[in-house]
Length: 470
Image 1 (cartoon, rainbow, N blue to C red):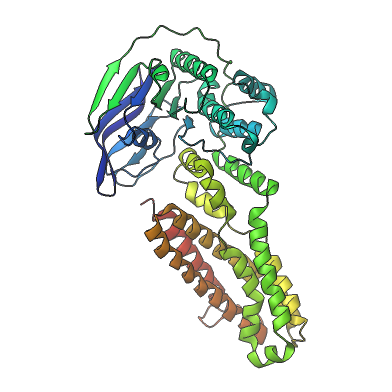
Image 2: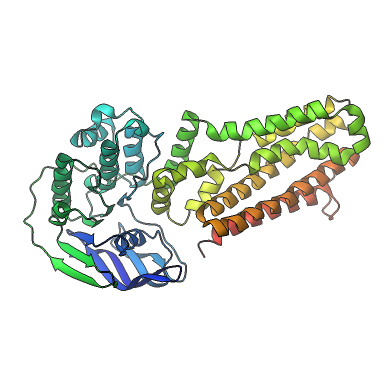
């Protein structure tokens, strides 16, 4: 039998506490491995670490890819690689309540490179008694049915694959009724008979009996192994559907778009404060005050609503926090997860329109300059740069959401750094308003200030995205 997962000399700490010590482990084709023990003994940590979800103090984790080569997933030096197609069910379901049942399963099949159609999806759902609810949102399901869907989502990438794959299941029987637990056992043995490998953490004696190996963790980080023999299963699984192009990143974008389209929390939460700022500007500031304050004040008021819209925390963070949905996506996407999430979570639509709306509001006060028309033709440039501020702010918010309370408080102050790009854009706009657009590259030219604003934003984004993983 060939290994699907190899773990060598693994040490994992949580603060000063050693959770896993000098762990060596292999998951082979055609076996089910059960991790058992009391709560806090390290079985969930080992399972999640197998998927590259935890930083490790020492050791190496590798997975076999579709080309039968062992590839790095994570090591103690901070190197990370993407997981090959696999199945994953977390202790919490890892699903957003705004997804429909059918959407959830199609997303899982897409990120794992399985070909599917509506008939195949309905067949899978029918096995687990979910087909009649496929158009319902997950939030409308009972806890037991939601758990069925989470378990099916973890098993489906192997069921639909003709090649052996690894499946990770954390407490899969928790919340399932007796019939669903029996079905789970049948699927586990059938998958093992077809060459797939399964690691599961469980307290359930019925699920333990389905394992080929039982690894029992004790309170002193010791591990004892018990082997069990099983005949080949003749349980009738759905027929594999064949492989398709793996679409992890595009699936994440489509998922985020559907969630926002269905419930536009992000757009509303950004739009309302920006419009309130515009209304306050229009209500509290008159023409005399603008003429006294000068072009610096005018430029700041033009850009302020747009700046407010980009620094507000994205709704994507709350969606990721729901039932550990973000942790599931992070495991599936791998090291590129934070990069693309910062782009998805940033404000793309609002900054540029808000700048032009602010411009119309301000000029409505009677601001008279000979080059107003020329200025309006260049407002798109700070609007485009504001998008770089948006992804930097989104990356900072994602960083803060991952940190413990003390670290998060300190990291929140990093948002103040983004005031600098904003001020540089204000100065550039002032120069355009006073002297028109120029194309020099000295430090006191508008293009240089706009480029500096863009560069600072990208630097903040890069630090927020790449520093945590390193």
